[in-house]
Image (cartoon, rainbow, N blue to C red; front, side, top):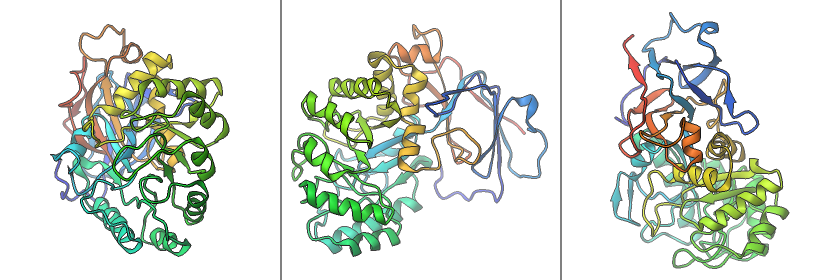
Length: 401
């Protein structure tokens, strides 16, 4: 995709012949609809083709996609990544990792801190400057069309409320993982989280054992006292807390429970089952925590969806909500749900060829990854058949207008 290509002043997208429409809304995961109309990168209407005005428009550059009976879901959201500069990561010296994740259905990424930046500044002025730079850079540069919500400062001792006010005024909306810097105690973290929250900045805390040099153990007591908006990788990144502490976090905190690919899979299932017993699956959100020592996982979000559905015995349409609507609502994003007014970010997919599943949802519930046939971001096709997923049984088609 040409990141510098000019978009038309007004554009219109129609997706028709949808076989299964997954809303991203955990309260209503499947919609009785077969057509989506989007205008200027926003969903305009959702319903039956016979009831929607899909032919003829004053808008230019109309695109019509025949879904060919495949499923349409909101673009997936990775709630936990560590970008650095452009589409390169020094952690694995890999180029193109963000574009590659787009081929895994990810259309939005949220930075948990640009912690792998070589020579990352740890003084207050330097960390603020780096956060503002990252926020500006990724706002202007979108690898594969992906929205990378970057510029997440790792807080350090010595910061005061004015620092958070300045960051918010500059456009910073998220803090990096608390615990990856010098702030590792509950009282200091809670004070800074409160300052950040008062200025509209969301917070995440590292949970579990140390992951990189400079990080350390963050146990349940620190997590509960800090009261961040997101309990980052509750299943460890990689090393998880003891079972009783994971259960306590689920029971005693009302905050988002983030399960990541680069964590302990057994602990992930424990957190899921505890949230399920509490009837609080709406709190489950997903991330990859990549790039990391274990590498980059372009299909990481799909793999966690399949894991939680197959081994956590959650319907596939609900598991998909963890990476779409749940995250959108917990993170105050304008995407992740298929409803009018939301960003027109979509993943078109079908069961993988030769999967034992009867259909897409059944195949995911059996633990198979879906085949992605198209990714759309802001109403623009970013990729057709994925280069990374297994080949889909059916694939959509762009029609000539």
